[in-house]
Image 1: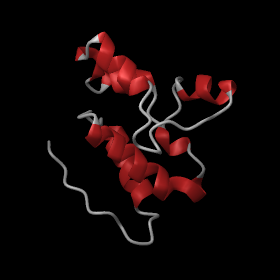
Image 2 (image 1 turned 135 degrees about the horizontal axis):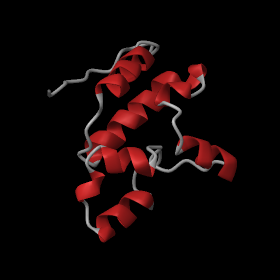
Image 3 (image 1 turned 90 degrees about the horizontal axis):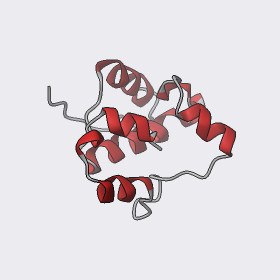
Length: 101
C-alpha cells in the first residue's frame, strides 16, 4: 500500500532492520500489502502520488493509506494530506480524522 520510500521518508528511516522488514512483510492488516504486477510496483516507487489511484477506489484507498500510516506511526506530508482529504471527500460517509500538526 505505502511505498517503502514513502515509509522511509515518513519516519521509517529511524527504524532498525527488523522493523523495516516487518513493515515490508506485514500481513496482519489485510490491505497493507496488495498484490500487483512488478511493473505497477516499480511505478509505485516512482514520483506518482497516491492520488493516481483509480478514482472509483479513492475512498477505500485513502482509508487504508491512513490506517497504515497510523498503525506504523508514520507522518503525512502536507501535499499528501491534501490529496488524502480530496480522496476521502469521495466517501459516502466521510471518515472521522484528527490531525496533529
